Amino acid sequence: MNPAILMLTNLSAAAERAAQTAAILGLPLHMRLVLLHLYHDPLLDPELVVITTAQAYRTQAETAASLQALAQRLALPAEVTTSTAALSEAVQAALHHYQPLLLSMGLSKEHDLLDRLLHNQMLPVLRATHHPLLLVPENGPLPRLPHRVALAVDADPFCPSIASQALVSLLASWQAAYTVVHVAAPEEQEAFAGQRALTNVRHSKLLPAATPLELYQERELLPAAGVLQALEDTQADLLILIARPRSFMGRLFHHSVTMEVLRNCRIPVLLLPASTTDLPRWMPTMT
Image 1 (cartoon, rainbow, N blue to C red):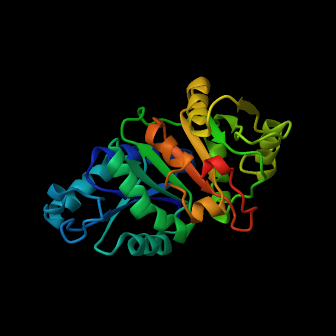
Image 2: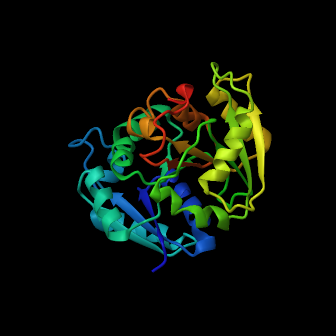
């Protein structure tokens, strides 16, 4: 059976854009999509903002019909599954059943909603699963295969998690140009940090050895602003961020560079967890 992408979806424009993007990215490997929809009443579960109040009161039959219609509009074969369980339980059950390579979800352009969605819902899931996560902004460009990918890293070595290593074939299948982005931390005094970042990406084996890599370095801007400037300067259409164990298990989305980038990024962001046996240090300004 072809590998799967598990898509957390609802009946919103953000979710449909994310599903379309995930489908396009999975096309080269003939992947399949699993659309996971949580059926909850937000009045009973006010912290859960996956669906709106209006959507919650649709009948299950109407919801199922709308989700099936969405599945028919996608570029990959898609299966719809629904759950009334809590988010973490529903995702864990879907991971066990479908064995996906990647999780995906849409990002609302409303910052308060984005903060709640990520911090209250996805962070516990990521802590539990350590799966790569594709985040697609609602107001981003039309879905397409990436032509230029920015890979933002610090100067320390990293080892992709087992789940991240499983995406190597997918990253290679896009045949994109890759730019390693290194934004120097304010206290960083070491020489050739950018070259070390470039070497660390090579040693991580995320990409085939023969993949050409460009280096983009920024020393004048703070990390989040530097990453966003790099995306503009390189005209990247997808950003990869490495999530090291300490930030990934702790405050990945809370007052972090990652969160600031997500608030302002107009292109899809792929979070790739590093191994829990990796060095525990994440660039100080990146957490």
